[in-house]
Length: 324
Ligand SMILES: O=C(O)C(=O)C[C@]1(C(=O)O)C=C[C@@H](O)C=C1
Image 1 (cartoon, rainbow, N blue to C red):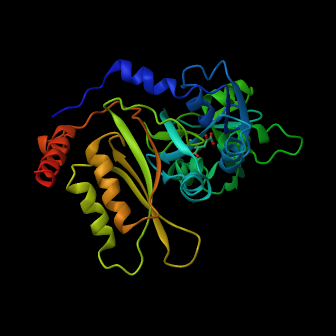
Image 2 (image 1 turned 30 degrees about the vertical axis):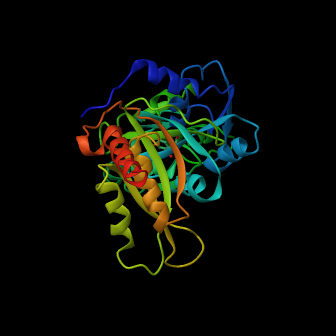
């Protein structure tokens, strides 16, 4: 059984995102800003660059902006822990939308330089992780100088006392700042993708489109043998596919972890709601972090027994027994 991927529903889901002020991991020229500019209308809206993911999220929580765009997952480096922890534990925020951006890096310098002249390279830790193999062979002696973003590293080259000899950044920001490109296409994996999420204060949930994701946070139940298997069974028996699962420390003590999970489907679907209700019984601290349209628009093939109709028929049958 395939669900619809209805264009009208996609427009309806997008209309929930009607912000006039956005924050994002800045400064201008980050991949995060590129993700934000993919949101319809964001190019006309006020865009507030923040120095960190946490600051971008704080601006939403305090009401200074309507929504924030932040990185959450990279196809090479995995989860962006600052974002996962902030939206799962510290903040009361919901995901409204996701964006995918293909990542390619250049090595840029303030003036033309040979690779042999480069002693220090600045970039975001996630950027560095994606060019490490190239750096090991091309500039093995160069020291890594962490920056708050790839664009901040690029701008740092133009300061009176430059932060480094070169920066790993996007081709676009190198061009915008008039930097000299030492080498292009230095990413270790061609076609790497970073996933970004647009988060807002809890409110209306984007309507179901037929190709949706739901993000949840589940504290791992303590002193319960097989707790993880029990959680996963709730999804498996209802045909709910997981597309990301990561464990992160809660920060409250050794051995205390939570799972950050993305599932295919929308909270409006009976099989998703039923799985979450089942998990709530064993992990009452479960948090719903949003249902939103999938950026890749992939639909899932469902078997008849996990369709909304099957859940409705089952509930009607129980009701008929009780009221016979
Ligand atoms: O530094 C940037 O430009 C960002 O938008 C952050 C970020 C990340 O956090 O993963 C985004 C995409 C790239 O994978 C590298 C860095």
